[in-house]
Length: 363
Image (cartoon, rainbow, N blue to C red; front, side, top):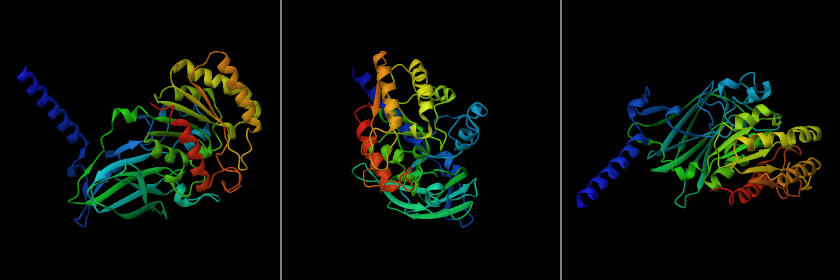
């Protein structure tokens, strides 16, 4: 029995060392800068979250390459935006350089700052487990470089642009610093949330990526988030229902009402949910009502959606939840840029409502 215990201990230690070794990114995988002091690591070496499919046309795309021509042109075009994706890594460096190259020259929009459309955000993990915003990378051209001064021996989240696409992103560290992917516990991966929705879901009009409400929810609940928000194009086509069933999240959140007319809701809402439920019989599905800048609840479209939700429940569909828009943007009119798209204040208020609702549903 003693020998068995020793062998078991040796096996456990061996397994632990393998996990640590597999998380380490070796210096040989980087490229030494001409200055002789900085090693550059491609973002593809780091742990990535928010990427639902591997077989994408470009590494930072949100949908698989196989759906081109099957989803609408608008959805396909927006799927190249890196909304919701983030890179996670650990290092003991006190200085982190980030270089990112954008695919679109349009760095900003009339109602959304370049820092949110095309910028990057760095967050650092605190002793209590929460993440603190450190600095934004300001986009000034197609190719950008920012230097972050940080505390050593920390874990970081690097959020990618919400409304632009990436050709590449690289991390530059002092040559003596280590770089590794953080351990990903199965319990955390089992909490993955898939958001499918509109421009608001995609992140419009957060001032920077980290303040998109979906990213705030991800940090608060310590849950990986896959952002399938498509500006003006979250319309519950059956092709999107098929795509969603290819994922295996802990919960689906459907937030499409802003992009749908009352007729669309009547025609597509229930069939979309039935298709999703047929393929995913046990996965919770949250139906979110469209937000209102003056906290009018329910909205006209919300009434239609809620009636269909009640009908599905009476049919015996379990694991279905309805999230009222109450409190999402506040009642003071200050929650949006234009009566629709949230300001950072509105995003924070939405995150409060969604986080509170989702927390008891997650494993």
